[in-house]
Length: 288
Figure 1: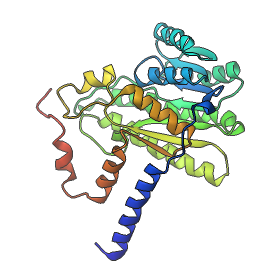
Figure 2 (figure 1 turned 135 degrees about the vertical axis):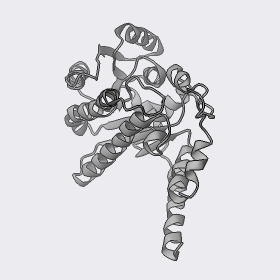
Figure 3 (figure 1 turned 45 degrees about the horizontal axis):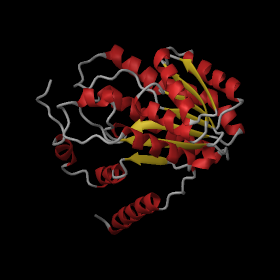
Figure 4 (figure 1 turned 180 degrees about the horizontal axis):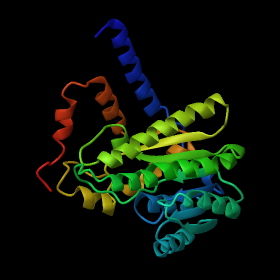
């Protein structure tokens, strides 16, 4: 490696460590009364975020496809101390639904301080089989609806110096097997919202964007999809949810959970030799 390359690599590694250890401190009180629209709130990480926001005293609008499950989440959040809480069933596979959800939240809460984009479409954990219909549907839910929701919410977020929190995945940083279409949607999220962040900075718009890169989390759907196919230990959904909320509240540009994924991503870029073989060692290709 040329000297300038070594300097750049060393600088990058130092910057990563500084970014990790010098985070803004999180004060839960800053979320008391905060107006939050949370998507995908009926289960998994979304449900856990709902409970955290309720404990912190936020004013919340939830959205997801299943109304009956949303009602149960709302009931629990009320017992945890939520100040205001509403829900609206929405299926983001329909292009008209995202704007409707934002309008509902703004009407009920009088504006938004946080838009937390967390929902995902039904995902198949399998090798690519040429199913274009599935890929189009997943792109609509996992990417286009995120863009639509963010676009609809930007006026009120700009007015209130708010925050966009986008839940993504390690598969949006590192291409992994069995996730071709899913990975494509997550790479798209990274590209769009990282670019949008730069545009907002240039325009001096005081809206923060936090991209959350998650590894394997112990939600029911993730464990069911990956059972027998990966040699990895799943991390805690409640802890992941809290890391997302903290990152959004402290205006971090990227949140990695577990934290060591940040170093994995850096090593992936810095040391390309043999990385495919290392990646493949974590997967069971013989399991159908």
